[in-house]
Image (cartoon, rainbow, N blue to C red):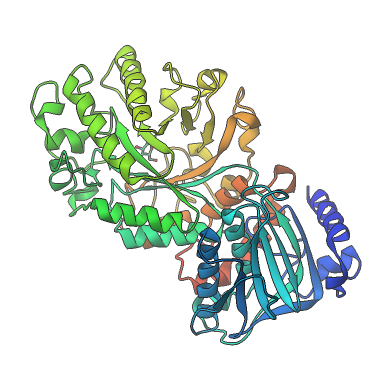
Length: 528
Ligand code: TNX
């Protein structure tokens, strides 16, 4: 694997090195370069790009007078330009860099442009020369990913402005695009509530590694976390507690919309989940009429699963689902709505299937594409519905055979809430204890019989919060494993190997420290 990567890298350098990179020697020399630390095909990027050729000698220096050059500020390219100008300005310890619009030549500029014809939609080409940088994106999202790569080529001190005036990136060329369209992370904000500012921080950390889907688990037995105008008790009562009995919390619709906007500006699509028909105690406790016996159960602050279910034989239940999906869909520009569907023990198989099939129609009537956990696979769902695989020994192939795509979140690999080892203070162990190499070293397209590459839409790392209270707790279980999820989602399988990844992962240490991330120092990783 490693030699394959080296070969691919060498070919890339040979193909890409041009007059701008007079410092490039032979391909072997280009790999050696003067980047600090152990060799990793000449770069320390996570996720690894498709092809990289970096100069051993030449570099581009970012100065306070460096400009970000774009054709026009009006569109989403302007958004990326402002993001870059702020990132670099802050890194230099000052104001955002100046943004220059128009076609004129700019000296000492970082030029951003769209080249939709030649470059895949989420792809980019980054070319760095001593006199200037150009990032071409297949779309604004591709440009944004090119910006994240440039960021990782600059010193970690960029992240906290501690290297005023000394930011430089090696000259070279990178050509890149992702393997999968779905590169996701899930936050369980139900078992323990995370305020909007913490969700935004998680979004920032996702963006650094080119993740593009934030799945928010907004309801469960222990808490309902999003305001629904037509059913106000869901939050006033259902949102009033959490695991262990703390104060809970919820997002107003304005706060949720603000999270969605913040994610969108980082090219991350928010995927709202309302878990049903099970995992619904918070809703059942808020409205007696959702219960078959018209009696609202008490609020629940434990961690058992499977005991709750909506009254699926009542029409009122479907009015409830319709109202909730309608209000959330109206706040969510992304195309997806996740209906949960997991771990229902209180219904017959026929009742469960009937419910899922009817709810799918409701989701479609509000213009959204349905997603559900693996349990929905046997129902007669549309081929547009996406199944999220999680449970060991449960194969969604029935849905795959009917055309559905699968998000791969196998609990025994990338459930980020599993402990790293038996000594980890936070987390659970039901799917095993998982160090970062186990989270990294598998191929989503070769994991489940009957679920080939073309049926896999991507990967997602869920982070369940039974044991997590503060954002620092969430970070500790997510990092470094979330970076493994990001590379599984982005990097071609032939380019991936643990031996190579561990070195690049170790190189993230200074940047993660500069960002204040509370990360687990996994053994076998040469942390810098
Ligand atoms: C299983 S994953 C669950 C969650 C728990 C999680 C803990 C899934 C669809 N259901 O309700 O929080 O395990 O790891």
